[in-house]
Length: 95
Image (cartoon, rainbow, N blue to C red):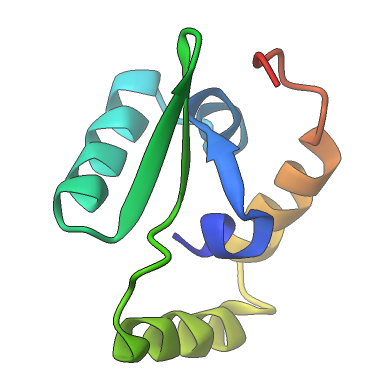
């Protein structure tokens, strides 16, 4: 969720590559977040892009802000953000 907060919208393929996790694992967790109303998705061809739900309650946004501040210098969050920034445009998604 913090990567979605920082990068606005990400494809499952981007998250899979950066997190070095199997696609079914990433998709399952994103599906759970979507079912809980925390993220929204859109389909573009075969790809599904996720973003934070714009209608999150204010308290959820505050928790995410605090989590972002609290993990700013911690591993693996720093590396994940760096990998995502470096991979921008390098992943073969249909953008």
